[in-house]
Length: 569
Image 1: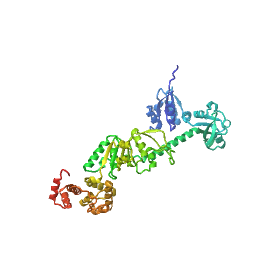
Image 2: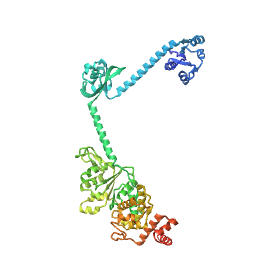
Image 3: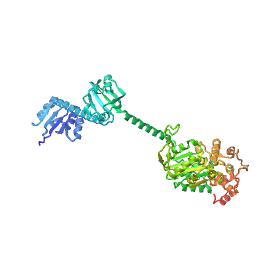
């Protein structure tokens, strides 16, 4: 095997074409570039050579005299420079003048363009061969020049049986023939193709080069593929619709145990029980009158549980019509009943992994109670109108203001469901049974409504506190909240007084009335007033003076009472 010696070449630059010659020669394996020269040290030729660590010089004489160069390409275009090179070069070195150099440039540029065209053709072929749609190309006379692999897959016709045939003979009624005839685009053409007789949808367009139509291309796809895509699209749309419908129903917990306010023994006992319940996944039954804060406890239990990062879903059993309760709980399939235009996820599915809060559980009908019992036992159900069993992992917290035991005795509530729900019972006492909680609740509500209403109320007078403590509060904390907010909306002073509040509770109860006044030991009432006064004015010396003045006692009496109730305060 004969190994050819690489030809050593030097270039004397002369213009922008020099860099093109350099790049073309650099790419040739049989050529070794040994040096370049240009009067401009920053010309593209010089920069490229320096980057490639090829010898460079601004003096062409230096390059011309170098030994070992087989060929010097003179691109300067200067007869004087060319003559000087001939005089200085070694005898074994050949010189190519500018005219021959330009010819070389032309040849190399054409070669470069051919290589680029070959590369583009390869890339285009790879793209066309990879697409799933069938593609067929014909020239202006109808002679078929190209089909891609998908064409054979769709039509069953081998490439060899199609290339070179005339489209007007093999498929005269197809979109490609129609496009060549009319020289216009053809869109959505429906026809059958090949020996397979597959029905396809075709789109064809002319191929225009320099303003002249050179042929046409057709792209087609089986209708079955399109129908499958439409079916998948419909399924995706259904999923998206269900997600949009469900997103609005999924929430996290809004309240924590820090949002529950109270100082009484009964409040603290309830709070402690709720915190213990939060540590387990057991079902919780919250019992209490309307307005006592059952939903707040449910939120707080969820937030303190290991499900806090999962959904918290609420269902008010009393607010949903009985006919819709089953669908609301378990969801329904499309077409399950009139108006079921799409599949809907039920509350149990939405709450999967999280907590489902069933408010007013005592108002649920017996039929649904049986279904709920099954879910609580097996954690599985079927959607309305469906047959697929759906498994879930849901922690249930139920609440009611009704006497479920009495409902069980009447046959209005299932006994087995009652015991399934009542694993952990949380009783929230009414506000009238924990009057000590009223002052701290008032302070909390004033801060809350200052933010909400943009007010600057600083506190409440002892007389106003006494008015609120003496009231029966049939609506519990919710009613107290309503009274404080209404008073703050209309109050212009920075202290809420008897006059601000009496108009909202006076119609039910007045300070002098005894119909609903809660009877409590005088010392307890005295402690409440002392707490309220210190909370209002502070525990500094100046604050205590104002507190004593508001309570209509001397400062010494105030200190004696504070000492007396030190343990309780």
